[in-house]
Image 1 (tube, protein in one colour):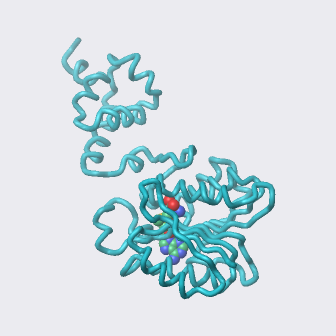
Image 2: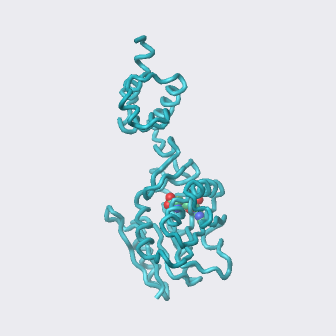
Image 3: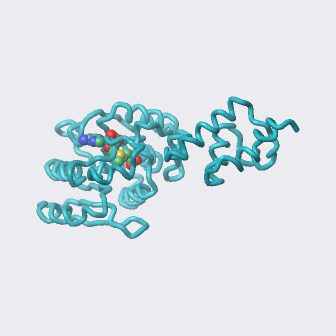
Length: 273
Ligand SMILES: C[S@@+](CC[C@H](N)C(=O)[O-])C[C@H]1O[C@@H](n2cnc3c(N)ncnc32)[C@H](O)[C@@H]1O
């Protein structure tokens, strides 16, 4: 076999990538648009120059820390595949527990209105629409670009007729007399010093003001003002103390904290009495 061919077959390219083997393999699956079984069955297949250049470009970006999901444009969430771009947060596994809680606390047969505030990729709204066939979902965001991605995911999962998109901040997107049964939100909740840990994702999706609590605090007040029966908000574990103070001062609501699978406080739940 000529030398160029030896260095550009699947097996050699994977060995030389210098990434975690599974990541290299999954990037190559993405570049070749072939199933993993093809890579295993035909390791001698020669990559075309275009494929080789694309793969090497992705490897370099991955080495520089670009999240895997941004390189492939996809992320799994609650068993569904979501398109992601650099304009949206990559859905996180801990947010899947928010879905578990909603499914456990919603009657799947009764019609309900749920608002997903800060929908991003639409992962929460679309998943709830899939699993709650009688629910009507309102999905909002301040980012038009995020709403575009969410709309695409809604079409992919064929739930467009049950999700209404609105552009705007927090609960200001609701009409004066509109009363949802439930507010779900994974709003930006990081304080400025924490942002350096997530350099590739949009600041608009992460930064929640000085203590990270600005938006969470505002939405709690809006939930209470509108007398919305229930809300579940994803939070940073360090915010429990502040939110306890806020919860204690709220009249007409019970509040509780729920932990994620790592045992860290992750959700603030409000229910009116
Ligand atoms: C942490 S991301 C969550 C995205 C998605 N819900 C998820 O769980 O993966 C927060 C989202 O809130 C949006 N956002 C930021 N400020 C907002 C505001 N004042 N009102 C509504 N959405 C806001 C951001 O654009 C971003 O898409």
